Image (cartoon, rainbow, N blue to C red; front, side):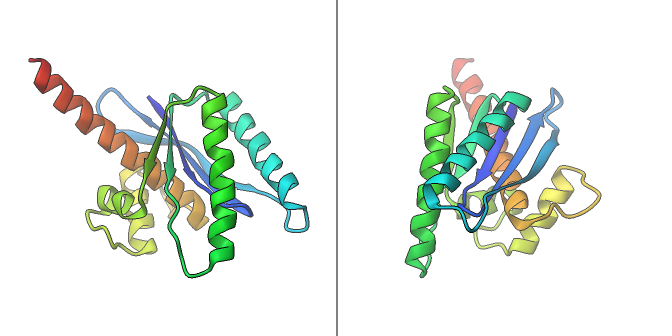
Length: 168
């Protein structure tokens, strides 16, 4: 199973693709950020985000997508912009018929670090360790996207074990 994790944003959207192997190990396939130009009008930036998501999908053909839910901060303008980018991500998943799963930031931290209020550095370090990466994944948006994908794979493994135990 290949999962595309997304940490949405207008200027930078983090992405991380992970694959769960038969042994249960998780490995990173690719990660990075989708960037849009600051001077572009917002509709053009959102279109660019959509088109770059299409390119990622065409290249890696993920089976599922996991997206971080909007965390409302004190900066309303930033929250609205992130919400608009998240909307583009959700639309992309719907049009691609890609199963979509949403996770709260605290859920991701709990799944990856074991603590719902873990720091950015703790999340990066655990992502590095779980994916056996030589260095911390950078930038932060990419590390967060990998963490979201790991969270989903971990939860999928748990859900499948529960389902299997109910069927036996």
